[in-house]
Image (cartoon, rainbow, N blue to C red):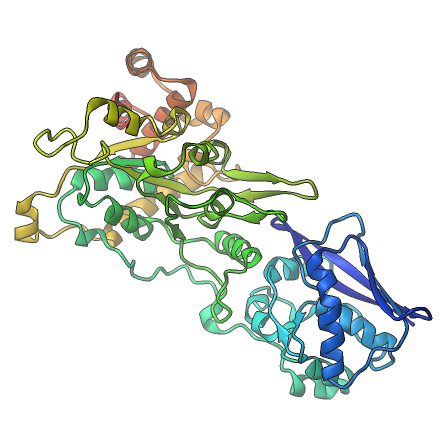
Length: 510
């Protein structure tokens, strides 16, 4: 007997549909899997055998051949227990041959026949819809995630026995056995943004650094805050997500796909509608930060896509690890290549970093600083120059004054600041309409030449700055991008000298 089942798999953030062919023929009893299956698929043979036996079905003493196509694509980080079991049941005449036409099957089996959730459901279902498939059979815990895709019939099954009952039932009784999943109102996309967890109104003083962070949020610029311990750097960074504009539906789906592939979605509320804020510890590994593994998987820099990546105590991160951020910060993506597979993950986020001015943290207060000059220089040199060159805004964070702590002054809330940021972002959306660029920080050289036109006076001023500040071509372009954002915040169509001067004030100083 022969059967063919349609399933799906992920490779990086791209997905493809996969055919699973099952053949039962005479020969020595064995289950042979071909078509470049990985260890997780091969181990599934024992799970499938035990699950069928515990559901009352014993495999015949025959040769069972399972083929995964396309055969030239390695299938290492995926589980296909349920579609293989369905194909075997068809070959055993338990299920009709045409049971699963025009549908895909996903799922992992436990030894007692329960069906467990799998990763990457959302992008697989989207790919199935593009290919004309309209029915998906998958674990019940993944049904909410799959129901995000409109126009699909989602059948969430909990056990192998339930799948068999649903399959052999008459069409008019199928929906009684397993009602198709319907997205709840809480899973539908909403442009409204909840109150932020951390609000700028709770940060007293620090008006200059708040303005710098507003520039960063308005234009998508990277920031490095330098200040002594206890000055509020971490708290200020945690407040930034609250002033970013809400995710669009496209951005929300893009982010949800990434987290689906990483297996980090909430089964009850799978649609991500908040911008992520990730703060890895400086002991993080290379694969955890950048991504990697035998099968490429997204790292923290990708999970922070469309949000904030906060690196506290930046000099404490290994220099080798910081150097790996060069290309992601510039290209807004991560390319991971392995012997068997290559994947490209998006990494378009705002980097906010924090550092102390010296190892003890109190320089230049010589009454408290205990560091020698060589110690201070060694500490600062831990941050590679190419990384510093990729940062747009540098801000000195001073200790909070006792006056601000005693008087509890009324501060601007994140909601007020966010309203200004949204207006600036709307200008940029109109400016870059149809280009695929979302904010000023994403501009390339062509866009800079088009949208950052300088007058004669401004060109002369920039020429003097270029030599005085020792700018590189990259830092010059970043200067113009920042000036463009400052001009947008002041509702100016042209970049003026004062905008360039303010942007230059935020550049790195020796």
